[in-house]
Image (cartoon, rainbow, N blue to C red; front, side):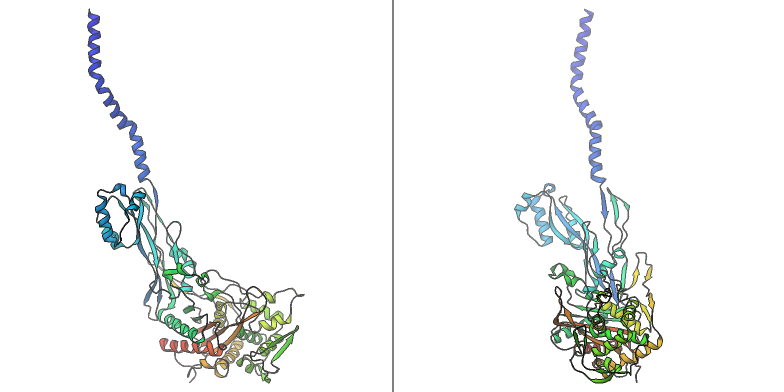
Length: 555
């Protein structure tokens, strides 16, 4: 009887306790077993590594007083995304968003996707208005965009920056590319919601470009191209230590709309691209002749108007002979026969050796990317293939190719009486901590005797006073320069087209040089350098004299 009672007792106990077992087990499973799963989901949501995008440094130009002018800046923008599944009141939210963005949405768009992009690159003000709606369905992706307040100002030299695959601005051409590591800054890192490494903004650049000289150079160049119906051109101005004051180039493009450019060649500045320079090369040939004591400027030779060598006839630009004439007069009148006479007296080996000493076989020393070595290959062939004609044409700038940057370096060397310095476009780097690094000119080499430069200076001044540079004459100022016109070779076959490139390079005042200028006009439909580039040089010289209050040296 006792045993039956115990069984009944336990049976009743189990019946009363069993309903509580399942809830207790469920709670245990929820709190203990599901904890790991929930924690894993939370961790996966918040322990995501995310890059903090740094702000790219600004680029400025300046004026003669040191005032700065922004030409490349960075602005923060946002892409806006919408998740309909998070909407509390779909129709109301869409109406509010549409009103702020000023756009309407197709209802079908929301039915096809869960999360999608509804607006790109909105500014901070619009973002704040959207954020004030406090919608769970709305979120933003932050990024930086490059903008250029002056549009096409300095564009082939400045280049542009665009977003890479990590949404970080990367310089593609020009200054933006060459100084990309300085400008871009260092990304930071978010781990979950915690910043574990702060980003470092990029450094700012201050160019040596003068805002007002650049503006004037661009205006003069555009006018010159229009008058001559030319394809393009360059006006470069540097102080004699190589700091670029202006570097105007056409064609140019709007840096804010670089993606609209059809011909990508415009992205690459012609300032560093090789071309056959023509008779400006005669200044270099004459310098080498002076330095090697190969001729006297007053020495006379017979100009027949043509020289026959290796079966080729080489003419003066007008195919006319002048009879007996001094080598000084030959330079002033830009006669090819005079340059050939001087090169022949120098000797081919010495001539080539000095071209190399003048760094014409090397890349120009300038803070720009994608540089090319000067092309002297026609003068460097084996003795079996080497011909006199190659050296004779090189003496007046045909059959070899160098860049405007090379020419500017050489004429700065003439102005500095033998000190060859690099060309600089960036004047200062300002680090995020405010530390300023000054870009310093360096002496690349020193070449030549003072006597050689004194005579060369006189010869080049004579070109302005009596010769092909006479339209650059400026009362009270001596100007030393040389003109050049060269036919453009065909790209895919031997020979030359009928198109020309005209160049004029000069430094002034001759007795105490301050600036060197280079003017180039590509494919004009009329005239040689004397009537296309020299008048433009005169305009920029007049502007520089007034702007910098340069004192006369030839009263």
